[in-house]
Length: 413
Ligand SMILES: Cc1cc2nc3c(=O)[nH]c(=O)nc-3n(C[C@H](O)[C@H](O)[C@H](O)COP(=O)(O)OP(=O)(O)OC[C@H]3O[C@@H](n4cnc5c(N)ncnc54)[C@H](O)[C@@H]3O)c2cc1C
Image 1 (cartoon, protein in one colour):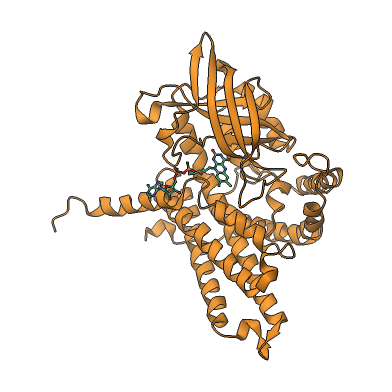
Image 2 (tube, rainbow, N blue to C red):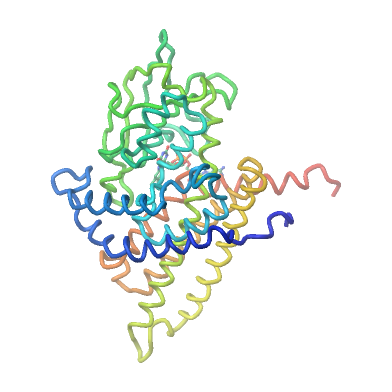
């Protein structure tokens, strides 16, 4: 292994913050999160209820006061924090489903804010980045298309933006656009094809688009295992001759691929970091439940192959954590682009591993495991979708395999 990737410790300066954020989650978020999810808005499922708003906004204000806000920003507390330090923090956030939003570190907003911060115009920053950074609005990222195999970004040619005077006219469809159902979602980062015949990486343009633009219609939610995911939702969106001004272009015409690459590096790794926290939570639930119930005269965790189940889960989590930390370090030392094989390694491994561990925890709970009485069913659903979101497992394995083959290609047998 590259020597520069050996030291995977959290920096001494940042350790107290990780501990304090962990305490904040335990003391302030965990006691109210069940109530938050149990009090949806009965009149409009796509908006938070008054009680949910009260809980969430109260927690956000407390987090802001403590300085636990926008940790992902390169300017957090002056110089920002390293990806490695962020990994320790994200694992804490992964343990509770409300945490990321409380600290304004939730997907897809973090990736979108990074895009606007890095590539947006002054007007984009003023109109959209500022309220996003302030936690006043939410956003979505519209790339995947129902009519194209979207795991290959070059394929995304159904939604076209045709130049008309100073404007672009956009027609097409997107689906599984996370967060677009929420009434607080006010802006989308849209990838549209501006030059279908152009070179593979110059075909697309990225736009910063208000959700209420005429011609843009959110048709409804795509379901995940039968659930519509309200109020967040993974939405099906139609563009019917929507007129976008050229001021909405991000970075420049034909530079959409570049923006997408810049966005997806940290976003992919944040999901994996949080997933380690989810796996820890699943293991904790598995063991505590297995100790609390007896069958055939013994605690369930001590029956049959269940020793093995616990041991394998611990081993896999610890291996996965090391790989995530190594990837975070690689991003710090080598940069996002050079670290892309590391990123693909964890994206291909962690969501699958977390699914397996949550599934084992479900099994050990018996029927209760798939019920509404534990968070496991919803955790499983979320983890399973991560095997597609930001690229399916196979595409990431392809990146890893190509890198391996490249090392030997051309060598004499
Ligand atoms: C819950 C959820 C949320 C999402 N949120 C968003 C979002 O906010 N914004 C957004 O734009 N998209 C989002 N997506 C979409 C996601 O990014 C795409 O589903 C993913 O990129 C795959 O594209 P596709 O569905 O078109 O699959 P396809 O491209 O049709 O691929 C289908 C399958 O083909 C196989 N395959 C593909 N390439 C290879 C290969 N190289 N080698 C071997 N097999 C391969 C894989 O098994 C893959 O699953 C979300 C998806 C889900 C499920």
